[in-house]
Length: 288
Ligand SMILES: [Zn+2]
Image (tube, rainbow, N blue to C red; front, top):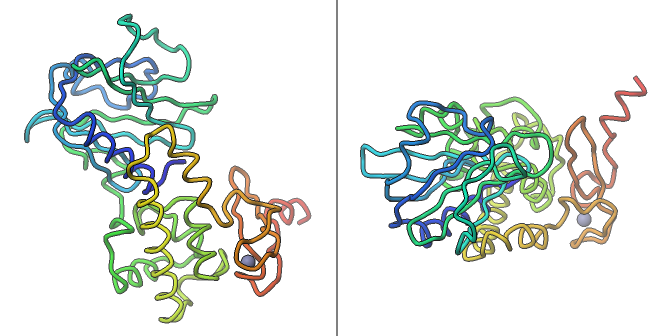
């Protein structure tokens, strides 16, 4: 799933490439992807792209002036944005065909497709007058890269829970997802199951610094990359995430995994849990 650094990079790319251009055509191929019906999709054509930004993991394209519209997109787990220098065919998209959910054609023949791989369709696009009309946006906590150490402490302690779950809770902090939270906890040498309300001031500071380091490094690596290269860039920079069975780059121990029903986390026992492997939640549930 694209997280803060990738969405920031996509927004940066759109600022460079799409801002200032006029939307020629806004095509919706997957009707389940567009979650709003007023204003209608037909209202987009003719509007100038005036800004591109993000709210947590939501991408926000501003169309028109101050009374304009926002195309807000949550790429979900398998969604992506493909920028095209030139659309070969002027033919309109056929509804419900292939991975393309939405196509935006600009007046210089370039544009982009919002796509989603796989069968679980969860990419969500919203056409709204104010981004706060999007429920997921209005519930967001402050951006992970915009809090200072004390705000971070206050946010984290506002939830009783395990570090992994609290860090990825978008209402606590916006932008951190499954991949970078594994990395942050590894840099902080902290168990994913450490309880946030029991963290000492020193542990909070360590975790805050790890978060700043991991997220800013990833933004630096990602911004300037073309959308097509972002996924590889993300994978190449990982220390533990999605590296089950491989050696930890810090200590050489084997990276381990805990699986849940629909996701998993990775960690290094030596660096994070005093050498003890964590119980696999899925397995222990079966045994109980
Ligand atoms: Zn290690």
